[in-house]
Length: 85
Image (cartoon, rainbow, N blue to C red):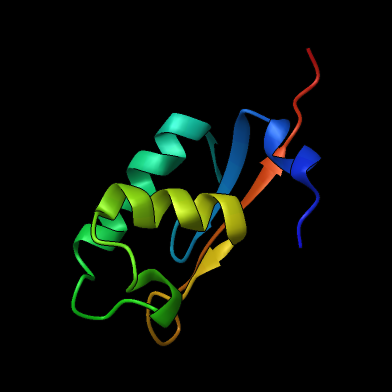
């Protein structure tokens, strides 16, 4: 089980195949996950199939995972980061 302190951060780094790393806020990452999941409703991982809304699916991923299988040779990973102020 991930340490709950990990989610206290409001910034994430997103790693996506074919793109450079991107820093996103929690809201931006949630929107990104919703966009990806909306296109994959016919091919969802088993643990996401129990949720009826894309928002709930994305929220669950954000709170419990750090990657989503998006196909052979492709990846989508995110990690909470703390930026110095």
